[in-house]
Length: 233
Image (tube, rainbow, N blue to C red; front, side):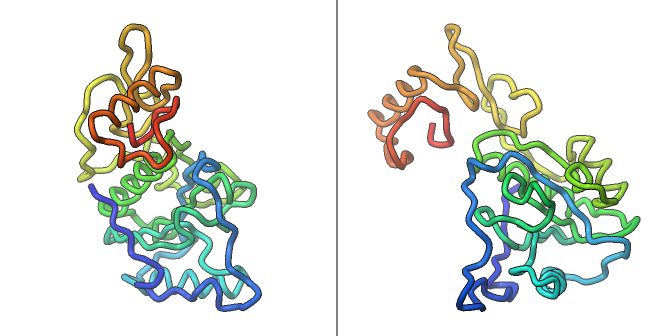
């Protein structure tokens, strides 16, 4: 399942720089992210659809005097993914975890049943987050970070079950064994006593990169091969 994100500009978000003295939330390096938080909207069922979903959340959060929508992303029951603070801005979704955690709201409330499309989209977003960060992010519900009922009993059970999703197509198995507790398609193998793949580190990884450059794949490296296995390798 590919991750298609509806941009802030497309759904009509208020620009971060609406106030000349503010450029919006601080930027956060991907290397600082190690958690993925799932939220819901609160006690009441959500009936809004489409762009009305992030616009309503933004209006509420602006009324709280926040810079704008507090979640990094919002997922609708139709499986749409709306950009909130995105990959690189500090969230406002869980005190103490707004830098380390990527916050995603699935737009349901109360005992509302999350759709399979919403769960599949959220799971795909989680796997994309792990890919971007280069390691497995901890799967958490909002209540794992602060005392709250969020994300509700149904979503919290789903998170604790590992975030399974029907209709979600994992990337093909490239061989090797999955990293324990990792997301799909993040593998490593041991050859001659040395580890290759995500989590691998050492001169042998640099050697792989240099061999790939020699074979014509240098364009995938932004700063040259190094000792830590990355998406480029």
